[in-house]
Image (cartoon, rainbow over all chains, first blue to last red; front, side):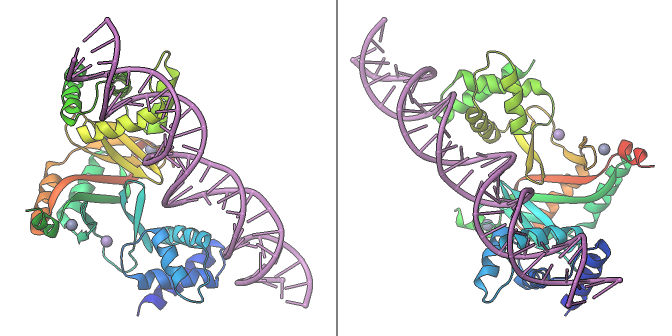
Length: 148
Length: 148
DNA sequence: TTACGTTTGCAAATGATATTCATTTAGCTT
DNA sequence: AAGCTAAATGAATATCATTTGCAAACGTAA
Ligand SMILES: [Mn+2]
Ligand SMILES: [Mn+2]
Ligand SMILES: [Zn+2]
Ligand SMILES: [Zn+2]
């Protein structure tokens, strides 16, 4: 399992930033890594709360998600209305999302050509890209079929 | 000016939906059309409030922005943190955005090939796209130069 | 073990947006 | 033109996600 690998890298990250190595932080890493789906923070808070003898409070979850974003293990992948959907991306290759506005299904995809074209656009504008997000909203196959 | 054209189309839209033609709604259309920049709703509310003998209240602004989105004259183009940046798109051709995370500058671009590739991806997943948003976050030329 | 800065949990604050409700208004229908 | 009814408005209040203040607990390094 590469979770241990990840945790040790996260430990390095914390040390290097002068932050402390705490139980709560690592519990949250474990939970997020084992959650396996795209998630919203409140969803995660509830899920963690339902596990027995859990440690982390809502504030700590929010604060740790922030840290994990800086660390690069988590990414905000979908912004819909006032909801933010995150994803645990450590180890996963970069990709974008199709979001069904009817059932909420999330489909992942990756197109190298799109990435290249983005780089080209950035160059054309002397813009240094740090990260990007492509969201395509629409109706998934199943929902489309149900409509008839 | 095509604002009148737009307002008359908006009027059709309202009638067709059984909504009413009111002063407030059209005042807001005028303000947004003349604002000329990407905007956040609170920013718009303040700006409208600063004009003299204005009609619309905060609630009406929020409600009308919603309507204009349904109508298609307004689009949520950037979601950054808990901020939503809108744009008056009526008449404007579709495009995407580069966002400087340092100074907030917004650069618009359009790449036909990217649009085509998106359609291709959707087809591959039997997904019916309704709309999409591509945000590229990074550092603009000016900010990059200032860094040295 | 001590000392000190960091983290935590909780409650309270925030900020954007939505909603409630009493009042006004738009758009019919006499 | 006057009345009628449903929709729109404004102000206050609620909601929801997220952040913050603060006292107590903890992690780290000497
Ligand atoms: Mn994903
Ligand atoms: Mn734009
Ligand atoms: Zn669906
Ligand atoms: Zn800049």
